[in-house]
Length: 337
Image (cartoon, rainbow, N blue to C red; front, side):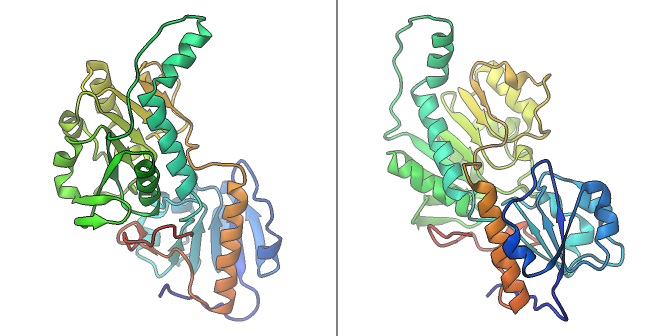
C-alpha cells in the first residue's frame, strides 16, 4: 500500500510552482489547503514551512537550488510522469515523499506513437512535403502488420504503447529491468543487459523509459550499430535517453532509416540542431501526451491526492526515489494514475 501522510493541525500549507500557463480548476484543492502560487524566483522563500509542493512547471530546474538546507516539504507532487528533475540529493536523501502524474499520459502517448509508426510506414511526411511542392510522385509504402516493435520501458506508458501497436498488427516485445516470456501487454520482455540483442530484431524501437543514471544515453553509437538499417527510432521518453550526436551521425550515414523525436536533451530544440533538417527525422515539441484537457486531468489528479493527504489515506503514484519512478513495472493494464 502506498504511504500516507496525515496532515497535522489545520489545513496544510501548499506551494504551487507556476510556469508559463497557470493551472485552472484549482477550486477543489483550494478548499482543502492554504495554497500559495509562486514563480521560480519566489520558490526559495516560499518553501520553508510548507507542507506540500505541487510542481506545476514540470520543466523547471529551480527546485534543486531552492531546496531548504533544513529540509523541504513532506510531500512533493509533479505534474508529469518523469521525475528526473526532482532527483537531486537534497530531495532523494530526505524523508519527503514524491508522487508523479502517472496515468494521465499513457493512452495519448500510445496513440501518438501509433501515428508516428503509420507515418513512417506510409511515408506520410514525404507525401505532405510533395504536396507542398505540387509534385505528383507515385511511391510504394510498407505494411505495419507483421512489423516488429521493441518498446523500451515497461511502465504504464510502455504498456499502453504495446497494446496500441499490437492492435494495429505489429509484433511487440519489450525491454525492462525484469525479463519475462508472456507479458500481457508486451509479450517477451528482454532484460536491459541484453538490449543490444533485442535492438537487432526490431523494425521500430520505441523509447518510453524513465531517465535514470542507468538509462542515460542508452541509445549511443554502439546501440545504433546494433539496429537494422531499415529500423526507425521513436523517442517519447526523455531526450537524455539518446546520445544525440551519435544519432545524427547514424542518420546521416544511413545506419538507421529514420527517427521520430518528441523529447530532446535541450528543450526547446536549438535552431542550430541538424535534426531539424534531416529528411528522415520527424521533430515534435514535447507534445506526444498533450491532448485537449490534459492540464485539467493533471489538476484533478493533484486534488485527489491532496484529499488523500488531508484525510491520511495512501497517496497515489508514490515514486521509489532509489529507482527514479513509481516502483512496480508490472502495473495493471489500463491502470489510471
